[in-house]
Image (cartoon, rainbow, N blue to C red; front, top):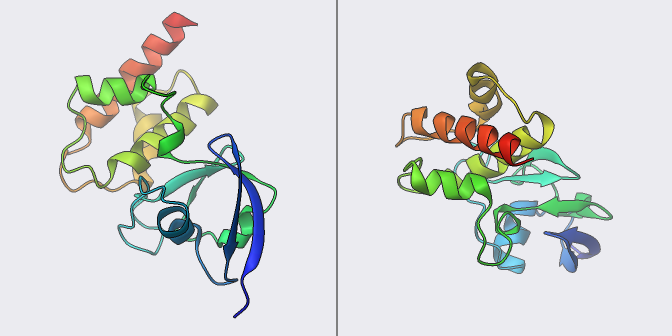
Length: 159
């Protein structure tokens, strides 16, 4: 199967790669581009470990064909921090120990950032609903939800 040339933007950087028509975005990110933050937890879009944003919309990269990235903008977990300066969500997850094994953490962080960009003042119910597509087998979710709510409050106060 012939590979197709794809031109896109990933984490603010113009990016080009070759992908077969049936190759998913997760495999291109991890295997072709070396962006290994997104994880494959299920391969069926059920766990959220591979979450990225496509033009600001939250998507499972395991379900997205890489050729669909043509002309679009993608943000991965690697695009959250600015150099050595962590995004406030990343910092709060560390401070509140809102992570354990780390498999789900990149997807949860990408999803939480997408939520706060859409709604900077979510309720606990809204956070839980928004993150329902991200499965975690370790934390019990409470610390994750608290970290998102505290980050939202701090970001609103800093604005």
